[in-house]
Image (cartoon, rainbow, N blue to C red):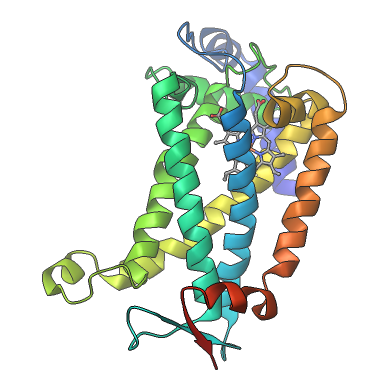
Length: 277
Ligand code: HEM
């Protein structure tokens, strides 16, 4: 708390100096983006919800895998009787497949519709502007949103890093540790050692968790009703529709998190292999 207080004071002092204020007027926190599309199409609203739903379950089963000393059940694929993984790893991987599918559809649609330019920096000006937006957050004089989908540069960099750096890192390191990786290719295994994958996969999960926390706190602290309408209904309105959809989505997510247990998962996993102790 003391450190946070010192940071806030230091940022406020800096912003109050001539150098600080001319930096902020030169870089207001976002740069000109004439080509950016406004609004949230229905597919983005859906992909965003399904992503949050899957991420909660993926993080939950990921932590479970690390903690598990004696799995309650194992799964053996129909096509490889020699392989055996815990039912928790099976659940984690099944969710990962859905998450990757959702992510690929999302990125392809971002690309073909032009919405990509909202989350991909298109100028080097993004860096000083992100610093400016960060300074404004830390000095507790938050950047005010302009256009309803023209993100400030700190937000743009965070979304870019999440979609185009953290997600691909999670996928490649996850595939390296999974049965999908061709373990009979020594050169390939040497080029990308499994130890690297293990060392990176967990910190990426920590990044996602921190991102989600800060992201949701900012959604609520910067006009909750309006923001929730953007991402749940695609409308720029200040009413309670988005909020109630958010509550409903939380009930669905918590319900699914409680339901990911062996009695419910085993019958599903049995469709693709043999489940036993
Ligand atoms: C239930 C929890 C969540 C809520 C309430 C929420 C809310 C929002 C809102 C309101 C926006 C639009 C921002 C604005 O209007 O300025 C947004 C955009 C975004 N969110 Fe979330 N979010 C949640 C979970 C997540 C998760 C788990 C991720 C990924 C790790 C994520 C990644 C993103 C991304 C990448 C965008 C930008 C989308 C684009 O414009 O293409 N969100 N979110």
